[in-house]
Length: 75
Image 1: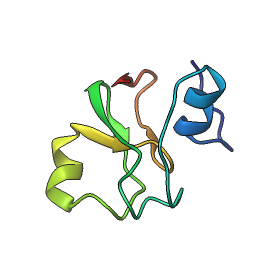
Image 2: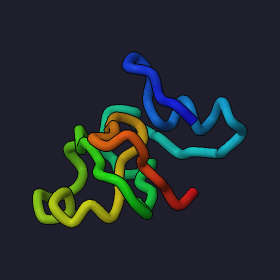
Image 3: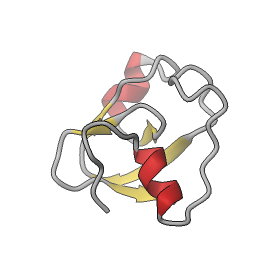
């Protein structure tokens, strides 16, 4: 799946039939967090701590993006 510049990962997942949860849709609540299997997330949330961002093991799909061409998620 390809995520455009003006859409969220959650938008693309939902369009492809995946169910996502995003209460605030702004990166504050953490309801949309999913595990990262590979790739480097571009964290744009305020929910995870700095240490969690550095670990790159989960991503808030409502606001964050990918810094690598491929970002594999556990959905």
